[in-house]
Length: 359
Image (cartoon, rainbow, N blue to C red):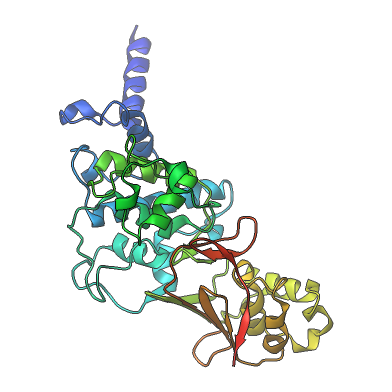
């Protein structure tokens, strides 16, 4: 009998340790949201301070934390059995990435991380307005700023979306609203999108959990994929740029191995092993999917020969071998997003990337 009682107590304690106790506060999610909220809490996405008042509007700062948590928890899940060396943690990002400024009204770590990964850029050059409630169209923009590259977005037409209030959606938000619906991260509110409606905590949690479940590769400013295993690389991030530098630690690392191996296999550089330097290889191959040297081979030869050049990718300018960085990505204020699904394209509507040298 005693053994049965002990087993029952252990079972109850295990259940209580993993399941949120909504009844304790007398505040529960809506029936349509309860299952997803429970999963999001178990996944580590929802901080305790947001585990109540589920029907209340969420603030910019609170939504930023949900997205940041979703991204970093996703990193761990995607890594599977790999060691921590191969996935990003919040601490690792803060150690290797510097920002060009700090918001004067928001010092939270997760706001800084949201800025780094591209979720937010602030409402002005210096202010974030952390306590301002978010509209649904603003939430769509934050979600797509974070995740557009990897999830294979498209732009659904006005007719395909079927939102009765589509024409009232702000022009700056339409690409995000359309893209979010195309991948199912954020859909309409019944027959309309409810663009100006305040997104509630439970709605925000649901979208963050959907982001957590989606395909994602860690990106700076939503555009530049970076590998956690490249420990010697350092990044400076601004509102519209990412600059990369290299700190030689004197060790033979994954970066050294991968860069040398890629140089030796590439169609152009393989016959010029005498020109190899780690800096040149980083410029050409550490950000392979971003500069696409296979399809835009014209960027390879001058960089291989140590020449500093700039190239216009339509949505960004990429400069190689700068005096203060190995490679710098300067983003243009385009309308829409970037996608590498069925071709390297950008804008709203999409057009294919063409690369031209800037003399």
